[in-house]
Picture (cartoon, helix red, strand yellow):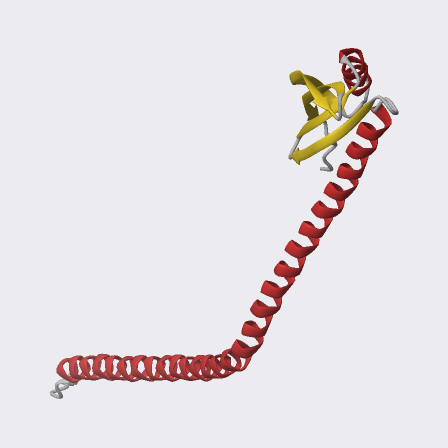
Length: 184
C-alpha cells in the first residue's frame, strides 16, 4: 500500500532552517555584544588605571617642583662661582704677567744713566717715559728691550733735551708692544 505523508515536512524543514538561522544570528549578535562589552570594560579599566597613574605623577611632579627650583638656584650659584673662579684665574695670570713685564723693563735699564718717570700698561701696550743722560743711553735701553722675549716691538715716540737742575738731559717716550702668553 502506498503511504502518503500529508504532514508539511518541507515547510516544517524550511521553518526549522529559518528558525535555526535566526537563532544563530541572535546568538552571534549576543556573542558580539558580550565581546564588545568585555572589550569596553577592559579599555575602561585601562583608562581608569592610566588616569590614576597620571594623578599620581601629577602629585609627584608637584612634590618635585620644589626640588627642581632648588636645583635651578644651585646651578645658578654654581655658574656664578665658576665665573668668579675664571675671573680670579685671569687676574692671577695678569698679575704674574705684569710682574714679568716690569722685571724685563727694570733689568733692561742702564744703571745710573736712565730713570723712568712714567709707566702705563694697557693690555699689550706699555707706554714708558723718562729721562736719560744722552741719546746713546736711550738707544741702549731700546736695544735691550728689543732682545727681551716678551717685547714684540719697541717704538720711540719722542726725545727732547730738557734741563733739570742745571743738567742737560734727554727726555724720551717709548711704546712697547708686549707678547703675553695666553693659556688655552
